[in-house]
Length: 254
Length: 189
Image (cartoon, rainbow over all chains, first blue to last red):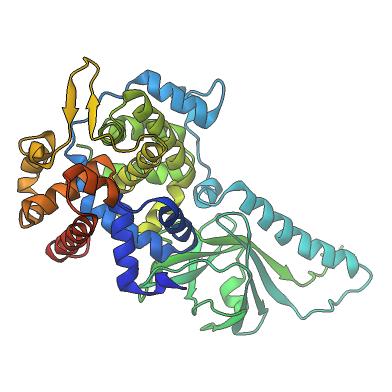
């Protein structure tokens, strides 16, 4: 039963879970549902917000350096020390943008984004023209590093096709937003996306794909408030990956 | 108390795997989270273990925080509380009605004994806040049940034992009290 789609029932269960009266198998099942459905986690979070002032009124207990050292040891391993200046990562531009996405996502995006055109070019090395029409192809991973989304468009077309491999839950009142990232990692707004339901959805661009994606090195997707026209992403990317350009560039004249 | 924007900024940095930010977050919030865990477990060592688990969870899941649209302290508290509740429920017996403290003095749970207790003192400190005002609108016994569930992580069955009322009555109290709180407080900002 999709109980999480019943708002009233979801709210009651979230209240029981958050207060702590839910127990046993019901508690474990609710926690599994929180991991699977953002709406369930958000319902519990609303109750957390209501009840949190109770916990905040408890007089704090001293939590000293020794306890922090144990946390540090368990989190970062032997020899870890956040007090060392070197522990503070100096985030490069690409790290700042990519950091919310685990390394696996980067590896996946790099592998497919680079390998796809390379393999293609290897296969077609003895010809000048390509079998596929000239296209932009983005292979995007989820924040968990799983295969997420394939974005494609004819180079001079106006339609973007999206193949959903791994859907991400979208909060009520939010939409997914497509961004184009240039070589400096600067995001350019492309368009809100239609609901990613079913295997494929399409999007019509205001201009040609070449105008929109010419400088794209990567494509990414964020969750933004519905109706908003953000100038830059307001939340971490939920999908991100390299944008391949499937056409051959003529060699420079000698 | 550390304000929300500061904690928001720290969590954003933790999501970027900034170790210094995690340490700063620890300095800002650990005392309060330790108090929450200790209130449920009544055991300093176990509460410290919960705090360790809490910060490891924060390190790995900080990137998920924005999507929940809750306050930083509410999110951190929920992680610590739920971990403490998990630890509590692995203990046996789960709800002693009579127990001895470290000095050998015997204590007995009784609903009447809750008046003037630390719980009531906590509630008194809440009186200026919105939650406190809303709690004041709830009758004494249901309010006590609600506070015991929150601060001690008791299930309905444990609450019924503790306050010596029928299980059905306790469930109805908790249900109605939560809904009255929701109506009174509205949706979180």
